[in-house]
View 1 (tube, rainbow, N blue to C red):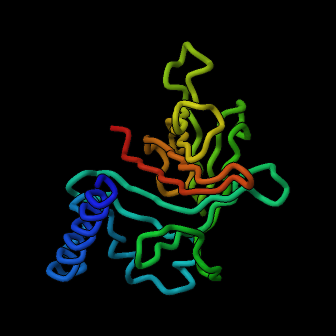
View 2: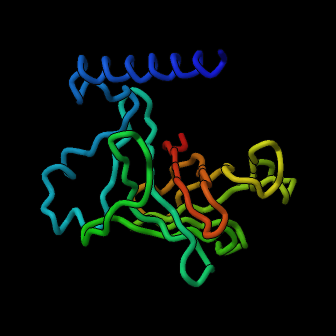
View 3: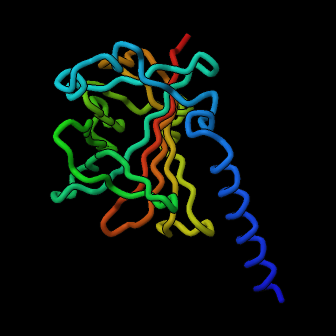
Length: 195
């Protein structure tokens, strides 16, 4: 009986989502805090867009959200960051390669003082301790079932942008890990101006 209840709930949820998608125009479905490209970025030539696209903070929230796919490099020394693809059934994965896409890398101990460093296009983000007096407060891991190393898992740490168009922005980097061998998943960077 429980199996049928879950199936009915899932079917109702899918129906509700489909009904909303059919009723709401695509542009209206975006949240108020979803960043939009700046007018300058929209008018830029494809060659200029290839340099380093920049999202503008939303007037409603003042937050920029960057979302990408990450995967362990072939050398295993860092995480390669590439664009994210989302299928029609909302399954995320690595986007097909394109010459004008922004890419980067994350090294969880490669910063000037051994802190995490994330590079995306021209932007560079450095990890910051949650508690400056506690050297173990950098990484905040959440494991499925509380079992260390279990996947899926989530890693969160504070960041500050020290290079590129977001210099001075602060926020968090969240690595949602789907697999451990090889390490891969979704990266979400949420940042805002420091003041």
